[in-house]
Figure 1 (cartoon, rainbow, N blue to C red):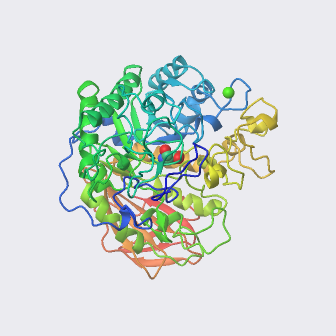
Figure 2 (cartoon, helix red, strand yellow; figure 1 turned 90 degrees about the horizontal axis):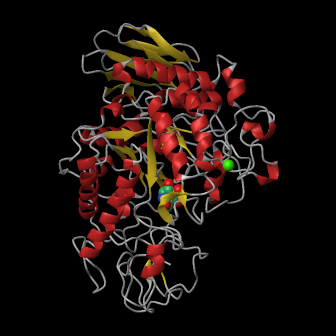
Figure 3 (cartoon, rainbow, N blue to C red; figure 1 turned 30 degrees about the vertical axis):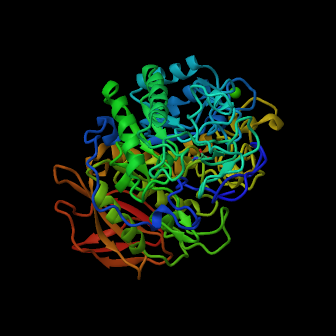
Length: 581
Ligand code: NOJ
Ligand code: CA
């Protein structure tokens, strides 16, 4: 599908190119295995237009809500927006100050809502626009913020823009998507579909077959039908996306998580020069009206994304051809979603992996990008396998200790706070192997684990009813539970400036030869805390490169026993995590 003859099938065709391709702008045409990860690092960042970020991000903790699986209030088996509103106090009790809501807009749901049919209408299965406005208001009453998911790179093939664009007669939307000028011509290096529209041409895809790419132009116009990023058509696409953002901000949204943010301008260079310019234009125009709007990119390259105006970028789970990035080295360095295969993840007790290889990948990106915004750790997201059951509860808690004490803004995926498991399930709405991460929230021991009053067979996905399935209710009652540990971690973060988004990060010990990982976080006033992790099965004793001023070894929080600091030597119990002052 990447090149060759047009594909004569409509949106049911398997048209993904390179699976979870996060660099679908054709920059790597002809080489599906080459990813942005292997491209040359950016050495001359463009200054960020977002030098000032919304102040609430300095101490933000996000909670990602997958709306279809969170809380069903009308017994139709699908989670809904009133269900999210009803659980805001619970979300706040986790120490979360903000929500990222996955797409909740009108959609045929061939990619779980990432195929938008109407950007300005809440999908009826989730409620009404008024329900979303009510959610914004209820969040704001609690001092919380809500980011919506902006799918800027593509729409559903059922979107009226695409329907109009498919017509042979020229109209306002003819160039909203990328069409070649003949039904037998494809787009070199880009996935395309032919044979399904009355228009004489084929059109470019951004992801699945149901997701035609919006036209933001081409960095290099190699064919007559390739328009420049400065063309009126590309400008009109940006205008349309700005209009969508302003619509929801006016109704009370606080910003956007931007899907496949690096995919906009096709044939862009390694530094995504034109895609960055497109975002700077759109974010810049939105910020003229809403200076406090917050933006997080699904990009995974903070040295680039944070120069495009984003406040935050995710450290994504990239493991191309078995080559893990730093995030995967920590928690996801395995071919298995469920466990059992060799697992080299740092947090796996038996992996033998030291922290140094993570540090080598992370630190340069952190240092180069930190003036521009936040490089953010996630516990998981709706696209990758949950940590459980691959990691034991203790391993997961050591991982959470790190994710919730690193610089940037942490994101907790719903259900991870109780250690919900990845489950092997048939695909649902284009989920494929992601489906097992998207099952209903487990609230209590009641019917459907409290998710829904619908009959079990009507649920969006089957709820985990195994006898040992964790629930919020059971973990509320257990002081040692993962839920209460997560609450303790976020509470400590909120009361400790050094642990918040801007606190400096300094490695005190990371090696390829042992399992100890010790780092300091330091606030603007010079106060520091030290985080000491040992996922290994043996105790560790290491000499620190330095000990920050004022740190004397007082234990603020620990799991699996407490590390002891004696001068510059620290002794860490096996499988432990400690935060010290
Ligand atoms: C990334 C989203 O996180 C994923 O769920 C979706 O399938 C693709 N982008 C396409 O929008
Ligand atoms: Ca419902």
